[in-house]
Image (cartoon, rainbow, N blue to C red; front, top):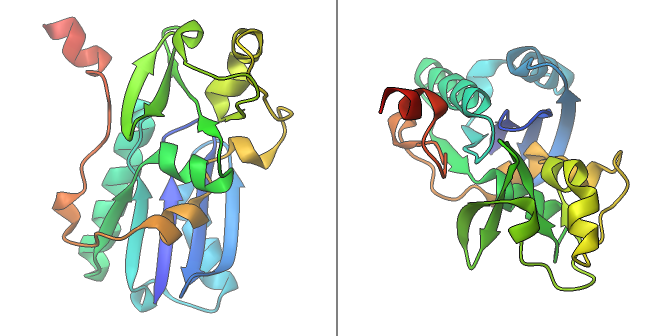
Amino acid sequence: MDVLAFDTATSVVTAALVRDGQVLGERVSRPVSVLEDAHALLAGAGLVPAELDAVAVGIGPGSFTGIRLGIATARALALALDVPVAGVSTLRALAAGAPGSLPVIDAKRREVFVELDGEPHVLAPAGVPVEPGTVCVGDGAVRYRAVLEASGAEIPPDASELHVPRACFHALLARDYGAAERVEPLYVRIPDADRASA
């Protein structure tokens, strides 16, 4: 089974091509270039889009614009190619890349997204419950390094790939493949546009 996976929810865009659990290729890019990355991955594996079996996409939490872009791209590909799609939490993909760690995604507005007891939450960085020695990963951990380290957390170096929600983990974690329209974003809080109009 050939799965194209990507995540556009954070400041780093990742894409991967996975065949039966084996990573055929992976790309990390800035700015958003997910379709270009997908094309390069398929070409590198000697595949054409029609040979894909499924798409896996990061559903957030993260940047509202990034999440929308990723899900719209996944839906369009799935409809055009007549393949199923699965959404995967960006927090869970980060956790899969650093087992035992606490993923922390920058939520802007001086807040971060974390998963506690299996549920995503938005908190002030100082409110993230960390035990001494807890390893925190993600762009939120990098941005709020000083605050988290003051609470006892350990943060890998800024350039560590542990901070990147690698798309290969989206493909490996994806389980519930189905119709494109079933994939929903995981925003955690209401978008700024909705808040302004309320």
